[in-house]
Image 1: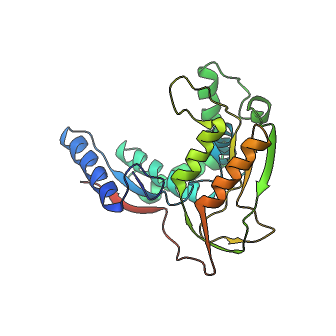
Image 2: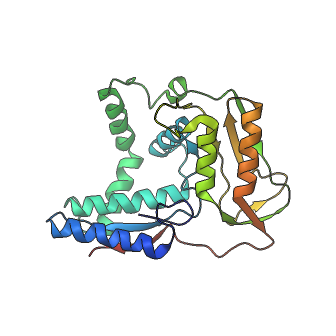
Length: 238
């Protein structure tokens, strides 16, 4: 259950109450359930969009690139699944098993089989760039001032992707799977003329300019770095 500016619930307390309700109902019905309260005061990984997120997911599985926050949350969730499914007795055993399938390529292999089973290309993992669409225009957006990222309106960033065509406002809308953000800066990052806020992938210059304005408005800079926050706030079991 997400907590923060990009979460469904507007406050930590409401997110916590939602998680406790889900766990209580599920456990009451005889389904062993745990919930994790995870941080959404910034983008989880380095990308936001459709094809760009799939690309990062494949890179994560193959080890080409693993964003630290994405790694933390993914491992925490998978640990819970292995323990709940009685495939591991504790956190340490679960993490060892998870790291092993990442390192030996089994995780990427299974994902590739899943894609093929759903009539996708059998070589998707090996050649994802061949199949994923690429936006017409890709370039970085920089802040107008220097400083440390102190806050981020994650929901606003998500809506910026929607405005570029990366999501639907109504059921009849057509999705542009190529657009989105990559190389996104994180809370606490030092921002200057060398470090962009993000790379924007857009269909044209007008769309890029609108997205750049939204990104700048959604990210707040300060002269001091904020205190670090955990990726996982709390584990709820009852």
